[in-house]
Amino acid sequence: MTHTQLRPPTMADVARLAGVSHQTVSRVLGNHPNVREETRARVLRAIEEMGYRRNSSARALVTRRTRTLGVVASDTTLYGPASTLFALEEAARAEGYIVSTVSLRKLTVEELSEALDHLSEGGVEGVVAIAPQRSAVDALAELRHPFPAVIVGSGPGVDIPSVSVDQHLGGRLATSHLLAAGHRTVWHLAGPEDWQEAADRAAGWRETLEAEGLEPPMLLRGDWSPLSGYRAGQELAGWVGRGLTAVFVANDQMALGVLRALREAGVRTPQDVAVVGFDDIPESEFFAPPLTTVRQDFSAVGRRGIALLLDLIEGRPPAVTSRIAIEPQLVVRASTFPHAAQSERVPL
Image (tube, rainbow, N blue to C red):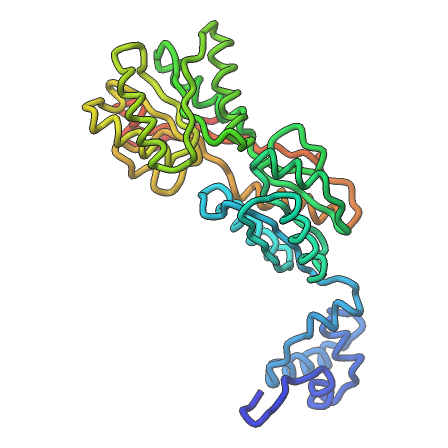
């Protein structure tokens, strides 16, 4: 489009330049097979020369498809929700969809209702809700919506189609690793009480200990932040020498705070206390010492979540199940073994 043009080029402009009908341009754009290659090439040259961009709104009126998906999320400053959101957007783009995101402070019934109304007005074909809190899942279950919906990060026991990492298994992997290293018990710093992910990780920890005939020690709780981990670490340091030799921390940011608190108290990691985190954030292998942690495959969550939603939109039966659990992976580093100079993935 030259600087003298006052409007973007239309399909009719392309047809005029290529010397074909409006319908022929439409067939080329729709990749229709009944178009001669010479004609197709001429139309494509005209499109490139004019800088024509197809009007998605007009296309939606004809096809009744907007190729837009909605995402509702909260707490997107945290690593897990932020990584999940990015993975969903990436997976949607790979399938030829764009994403309209609504970020809320809290996923209450009222705010969720407003968000779904907003997305509905925008013509989304389906919605993914990033809902790691139990209260958010309950709120979403109360609402009616005119499009298919999928929840990610919710854990088991959800009636809405869902995709999540198996947090319970992650808690078992972390705890079993520490017990296998010879620790007589494992302490746990859990996440916020309302988070289903925190509850599932804690349940995996508790059940692993009980299966070995061990009484779980006192459970501490943080808010996912390094500061809450630091404060819990100060309390944990007081138990060193009284049976505490290993700690499973529910996320890597809190583990960072624990490591600092232990170091300031003169407690060595892993010689005195071994520490395992959760998430495998990019910085975890650069902690002092590098952190053994449980890796979540957020890319898989995004791909499977979008695939499940598209199955629902197209009216297809889901490829596997409408409740998908993705297995996490333990990554062993020096915070549990002094000799672990390099990261080593431990297969399930």
